[in-house]
Length: 79
Image (cartoon, rainbow, N blue to C red; front, top):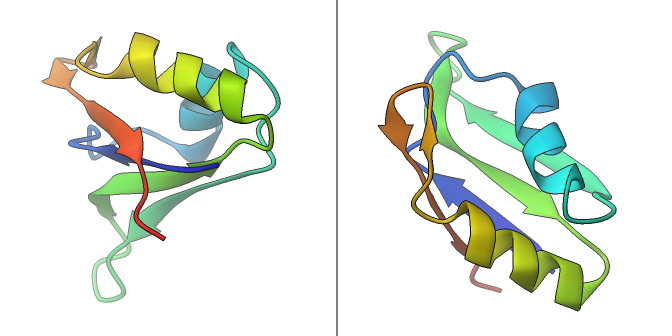
């Protein structure tokens, strides 16, 4: 399942994002979207988890938590 994480702190790195989701199961891919001009985070990223049950649990547990003072939003990415 492909997941989108929104409102990420701009200084969060991909490994930290991956670790947050890895606590709920296998993560096959993880990326934070970067601005081409500045090279800085745009504040959102995508996570892929192959087991849907684990992905749904991650969404349930991580949606609305505070990460480095930012309340993140986590949901299924549109196909």
